[in-house]
Amino acid sequence: MGVAMRRIQAGNALTAFGIGFTVPFLYIYVAQVRDLGAATATAAFIAFALGALVALPFTGRAIDRRGPVPVVIAAAVVAALGALALGLAGSPAPILLSALALGAGQAAMQPALATMIVWCSTPETRTRSFALQFFMQNLGLGIGGLIGGQIVDESRPGSFTLLFGIEAVMFLVLAAVIAGVRMPQAPAIREARPKDAAQADGGWRRLLRHKAMVQLCVLGFVLFFACYGQFESGLAAYGTEAAGISPSTLGFALAANTGAIVLAQFVVLKLVEKRRRTRVIALVGLIWTAAWVIAGFSGLGHGSTAMAATAFVTTYALFGIGEAMLAPTVAPLVADLAPEGSVGQYNSAFALVKQMALALGPLGVPVGAGLPTVYIAVFVVVSLGIAVLALRLGRQLTPAQDNPSLATPVRVTPAARTAPEQAPQAAPAERVAA
Image (cartoon, rainbow, N blue to C red):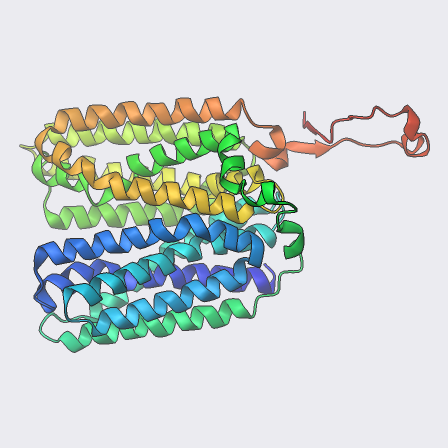
């Protein structure tokens, strides 16, 4: 990695650290430390998610017009102000406004950092760059949660003020780190600006007319809803209610998920780099189908605690392997589908789809707790649907979009260079390697 990429990956780790550092303790802080009750704590989470949904539709155009570096810096400042205000707030209105600002700032950073990775990489190196981003994000989440848990103390409200204060400082450090990034491969911002009024008004309309990108967004929604959206909501409710899983076993399952990601990330990278991305995503759908089937067995083993626990932990580990396979495939695919000057718009649109899927994830809680058989059956079908959607998307893509390493430039002979009039006017730029 060059200096720029190292700073960007450090920014990814810091962003994830902030989420892991405070978000797991937000409920306790609002409901118990500030004594505002469960309803206000739930509203704080809703405000946090709403901030992301409000900010992301405008983030893409800002990235493409101004560049990702100013967007990351502005988002980090907003997030720092939100974190600091949250640590000092003591009534519902300031807490909700602070959570809204924190959610908006953190959400806007994600597509901006992803765009910086695109600008500082080539189609051939992008897969490894996004794999490293996913690794750094998980590392940041894990370390943030670990350190944050050592700081907080329910009997000392000041410990939570300290927690949010440290997070605010961390976001300012993030802004300083990203401010020093120089991206030699970045396209000139003036080239990314719309050339006429029709183009200026057509960013989202152009995206919605892009059939392959729309299909990828649909696929992304299903992916995030079926996996990430269920981790701490529907699947946890299913495990505790239907499978009789204890909270400690749920903790082991989450640890198994993280461990599988860490161990598998760079192993599966070798597989991903030599395969079409859509086929890798289809394989993830099959792996997750197996994970949901095994989760179903954990429910059947209610009378056997050991069997239920083993099956449940295995489910989370299989989800982790699938996540490790998605990290170096989906994000580069979004980048390679984006027209020149619209990478920020496409990254923001996909981040918006992700946030919507995560926001709807808790809808699985009542089904997982009350209708466990239906819950498992639905997500087995959904996971199989992931494979079908991925293969359908693959038919819309060129080899260079599905995996640039599988496409090689056409060799041009010296004779062809000296006699351009004999060359076909629309010669293909790339072909699939034998």
